Length: 275
Image 1 (tube, rainbow, N blue to C red):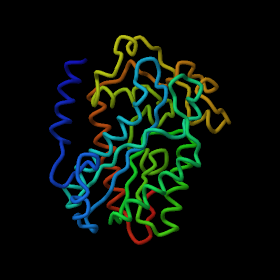
Image 2: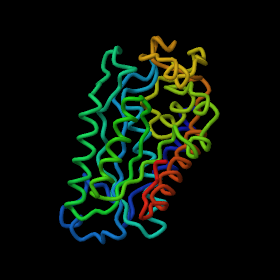
Image 3: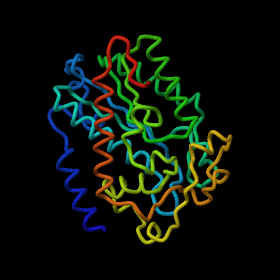
Image 4: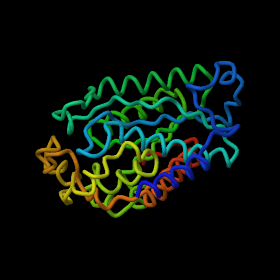
């Protein structure tokens, strides 16, 4: 599996390497940002958590996936004539469901909301007119904070914002069967994308030996559960980790990139891209 994963990782690197119209903010200069055409530029903020992802995946799994989504979306936007600027990821956020697992960083929703709004204000001062959020963390407190932040950004007229929440229609229907089942934390869905992007971070021996946990996090949330343990994930995973594959990960990253680009392309004067 590692040989195949390494080959697919090279494919991703070739496909998604930086171009003249895909810029990583951390790697560029202020003058290059100053000189961007605001009508073509879109800032992309990857958002994820630093939290437990089973005994086999790294704490930055969400960030790895969000950055992959951002990169794939940026390439598609670039092909359409946009200049995509990928921001450093927001790696600390609300993670109440995983908060009891050592290493998880849980930030209050109020802090997350304020940080995203402040990021948008700074981008607007730099001349940006559009922000896209590439999110791969689905804790309800985090999602609520991001939605509140995007609403505030719009209401204050700071800039246009695209936030395709894949837990909502129509976006989620395009993702994998495991994702749609709700049993998808550190399982096949997420494990496949980490194998595609960063296989060296996966403990494959442990992954292949983990039994499936079919309990749905979505149903647990609706039933009022507030932690992975309460939902049946005592080792901080749900789904079928042993079924993960780099091939599926490449395909899913591509779909997430398409979703992000389509959300940006769909922004109009009414700006309803997170519905």
